[in-house]
Image (cartoon, rainbow, N blue to C red; front, top):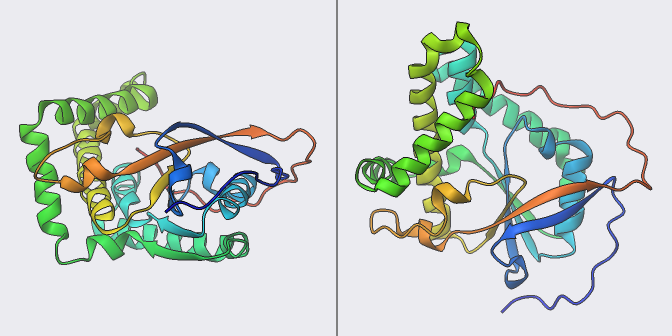
Length: 248
């Protein structure tokens, strides 16, 4: 049963949240905020806007600090070993939680879980193998994954001749990133009934993908949000956490 929602307080933060597309968030009592550590829309005034919006619309909020997933980015751009990159990403996740605790505490009820909470589960290796199987045998899924990787490469590195010899490495790190993300998101959808709220969209990759190897993906609910400036509110200089080097 969804929460009755007829009217909400005016959004008085520096940014206003608008739901762009996706599943109907009004049908859900709980949501999951997927946090990409290092992204500016998960810091400062935009995070405040997201939390301010969520606190009046959901009874409970899960905050998914997807930190160690970013190790693939640090491995590519920073030349780190996987262990070094994972430790850096974990530290950045710790810092994000400490830095934003006061903002999160505005929520009436919330929990925090980390990326390792999912990859450390006993069933993760099987789910990861299933994501790889899906890539090999589902043409639509494989094409969407490859297109996502190619688009990011072209946008960020396509015009940089000095990067061309790193394209194969980029593709491998991006593939590993997206396989792990696919596996964990399927696990989340199987385990929880939250609607995922995020200021970006990977809906084309997953959509309501129905496959017996990862059944959770077909039930995953997602709503994309965006921000508009609240011109009546002054935005002071915002302290930012040090971002991880990003490939995806």
